[in-house]
Image 1 (cartoon, one colour):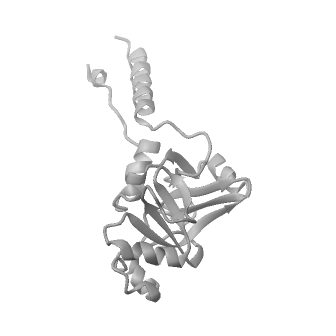
Image 2: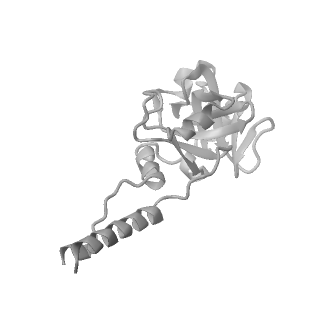
Image 3: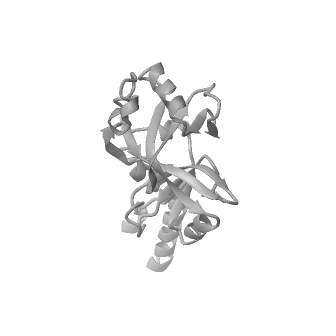
Amino acid sequence: MNPIPRLALAIALIAAALTAGAAAPASAPAAGMLLVAARDMADPRFRGTVILLARHDESGSLGVVLNRPAKLSVGEAVPPLAATPAADQRLYLGGPVAIEQVLYLVRRSEPPAGLIPVIDDLHLGAARDRLEALLGEQPELPLRVFAGYAGWSAGQLAGELARTTWHLLPASADEVFADPEGLWHRLIERAAPSGILVWRGAAG
């Protein structure tokens, strides 16, 4: 067999396999989508991060980084909440904007009034009294608390996506509350697989 057609066939098979293994790209950002930092992300604040978009409209975008656990617990960061049953859970660094602001994601079918729906039964809140009530319910409540957030002005995120700074994937509540260790690695492989496949017939 002529080696040139064989090489062309191998390349075609590799391309097809990589395309089949990749997640279908999302067409546009929206609340409930994940922003997965590209491998060559230049901004050190976002390198290796996964961000859940909680809001995206004509005025701009807002999200929280899911995989940056802080060294402090919620009670240590917010002393008035220290006496609540779930105050010892880990605080997360939600982003570089307004790091003194506390936001939280809670997963429940009937959330307290005033929370913003993000996806399915996942809701975002910022009011301290509602957070205190949630922390007081039970330590096992699916709740994640963030200091600060990531924000983009109108059109800014679209520009970053055009430069392939981020990959877009649909989010699920299970992924939001998954172990943050290795989260970016799992999702970047889904969004943009890096594996190299060898066609078995190449050695024949």
